[in-house]
Image (cartoon, rainbow, N blue to C red; front, side, top):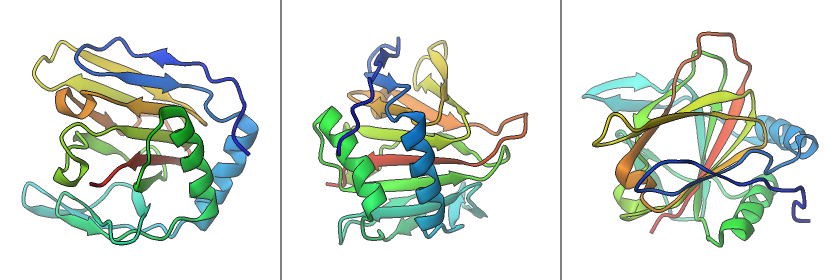
Length: 200
């Protein structure tokens, strides 16, 4: 059954790219259920990545789901996908109806507390193509999401990604912008973020 909860749409005021934010994409009741299922059903891993030639443990837990034969690589790490499960497929189907995309892969991230983070980056890996569309849905603790223009440091924006929200990063978003989830200064409970993308 598709989610019929009213979907408020906010266009972020940023040049050269399209960012659409749906703060209530999932109702609180459904988001609560999905958060619990994702927490318990996902085979979370604590993997190493390579930053500036040095191997470090990622400051979060991750898991890749996707079509068979579609691995995903970033920062010296190549992840092999787990098969889709019913919870992930339900979320995927609702997002695809909204944005008319067919995503092949989702990277799940578990931010355990305020110390977990994701540094400045663009989702511009070669296998995603030149101008990918990324759908990012959040469950659990609200965390700050920061955007900055790659060539104009006066263009930046901070957005709180709340429980049940969806951010669509569309045309130009991975060409002209970087984004991050910084560490928080106040205690935070766990947050799960799913970033759907299409591997070519």
